[in-house]
Image: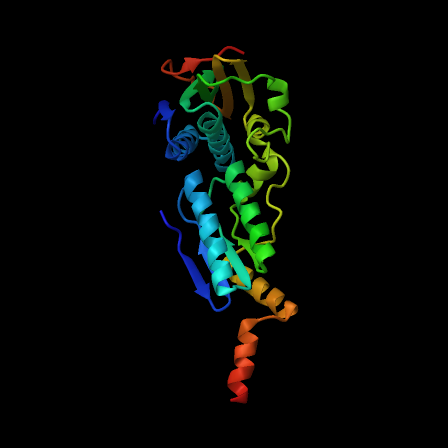
Length: 150
Length: 134
């Protein structure tokens, strides 16, 4: 089972690659089909943002653990222009590219957690997580996963 | 990757089967619209049975393509949306797809035929009458 994937988003077809990698990892992790598609769609939105607004960036996917749950962590990082008003970027219908304006808020709703760290002129780092099923008591997450504190 | 656009009488049938890049999606949109106008198609069936992930860009393109096709004079149905896609689209925000939808292609085609018959401008109808009178 892949526990880490790094997809540089430089060309448009990399978005589809990131989407596929996320779908595979989420399904392998034991997320329900619908939730795996949520993750894949959110990754698609984030990767599209990297390509459209930041001139490229990186998508990192990794399996993480918190107490007795495994989850998938998505990090979208770029050295683009940054987001001047994060709250505004997260509001529905706000768009700078003639889109629907639901990419970022949509991704936030599809994932369990999302944090945006952005500095104008420096870049943006978005971290999002989706948690999978609770593991049985006798199956502690193995130490190979990065453990995330609450 | 070029998506085939099949002609079934006065209806155009397209099925998106592969992961498309945004550029390919735009190319698809423009070739669908050109074909509609070229053959004066009365209907467009957009089969998305094979699509498991529809992001907001793809959803917008489907929406836009449908409105553009309607402006040209064609009826549009989207067929076979995966339940996960419906869940994701609604979860992401508003119902992104504001077009007519059917469970499968079969129903899509009969809905199109019904609507074309209602409009009363079917090309086939004229041809049929022509054949009978001659």
